[in-house]
Length: 304
Image (tube, rainbow, N blue to C red):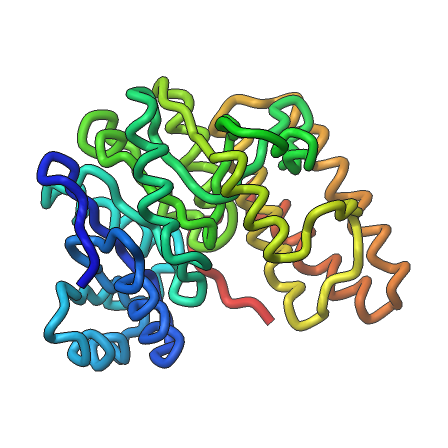
């Protein structure tokens, strides 16, 4: 086994999973290949049939624990469970991991934990992050130019799959946890904005960020909004629409809320560029998301 962190800095991880046992097993193996390994890896299983328990039992020689949510609580619910349980157990820093997104490089945890310790006001670190335009309600990409050289980049959001590591003090001292009523989509953004509101900062390392952007061949890429999405993934538009509006309302960003509603309406009309069937499906998800925001619909819904 690789080294663990110093005794005064306890480090654990939780892995959220739902019906992907093979992928879960590979991800847990990757966590224990890190140069600094978690003292504990907690599997938070959203599958009521508990397939994740079978995977956990395969790691009986390693500090792998299992917790069943009992139902599909979504990424938001699973993250709330994982953070709360590990914070209550006294871990100082907690990695927030998806079952299909292990660290890419073996020194990721070591690098991020060193970054976390560099700033007493640090509430969260990750390999990649974004800024959030509070006037327009838009997530903004960090430019390539900002990643040149050494140092850190302060961001507003570190999304899932970005090796997000959270300071447990935001849970134990500030009582900040993911909002499980969001179920899926922007739960990390909601959590991160609350962290910032409480006085903490979110940090990424320039060199690490650039390394990942190059690895994924995203250097020099221009982002175009409004591009066509795979039709079998359009259901995500419902949660993205509803949850973004909920977050803006909760944060009292009323100007951004109005602008975002208008932007979603334009997005409905623009969807018909990709064909009538696409446009209708796109409209059904976005319109329902807007409607459910106004009637305060929460959690998971049946989407077809």
